[in-house]
Length: 96
Image 1 (cartoon, helix red, strand yellow):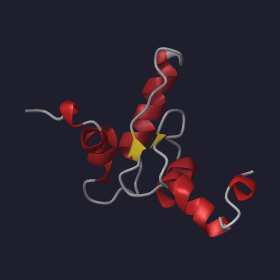
Image 2 (spheres, rainbow, N blue to C red; image 1 turned 90 degrees about the vertical axis):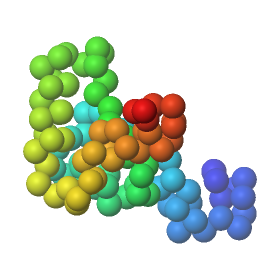
Image 3 (tube, helix red, strand yellow; image 1 turned 120 degrees about the horizontal axis):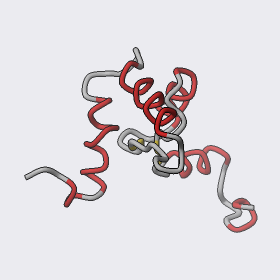
Image 4 (cartoon, one colour; image 1 turned 180 degrees about the vertical axis):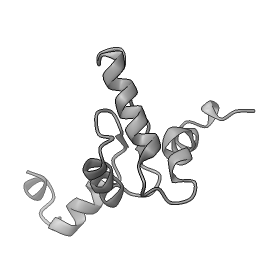
């Protein structure tokens, strides 16, 4: 569809556009999904998400634990996902 709307769009260009979407971590805090998400999304485009209260509290807590204990975070990456990226996207969220 995108190719029909923009005939000069390449598959690589479309992937670059998709990487600039913002993604959340709701129901995706498993090792395979986090690795895929952080490898695909542009830096700064992954935000914390829980789907609570739509998700049972124990499930949301389990996904939070998975996010906190994921062994592949680079320095500052977990903080960025938990809060920092949202503060950059919506500056009024930043702590004074």
